Length: 160
Image (cartoon, rainbow, N blue to C red; front, side):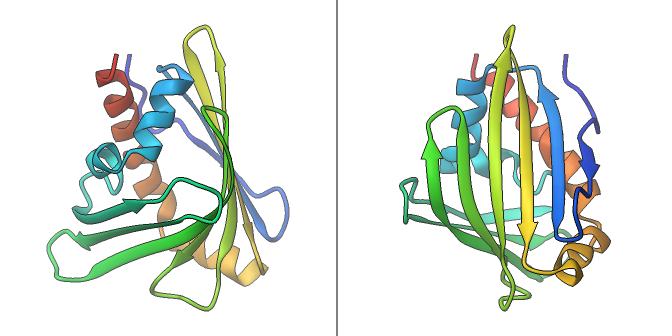
């Protein structure tokens, strides 16, 4: 069963966003879907545009970059960062920079915990300041993230 719009978003501190969602897929398939560029192109951004670039150098100190052209426009939206910690099928710690606001970054810790073939994905987004966190929340990121997570679940399920 594919879930829809079931991620929970909370604000544990003035600088943090905590995102939690359970997926109907084992951790190793979610891992592939979030770390293999050809698979990321199939879910990131959902239906909100054309994904033009996904680069992932999955190693500590490696870089990543995603770029899409927003639907109905020629506006390019890009994010990039660096990997700080990688534990295969369990955890990724990385920076994230929205290229439209390059002076700020967050440190995102994603964890995958599997039970009975289902996996809970948790991402703690640690911003440098409350204003940066609030800007992300006010950007409408949650609606796009929910759509992307639905697409992520479909991609992971198709890998079975």
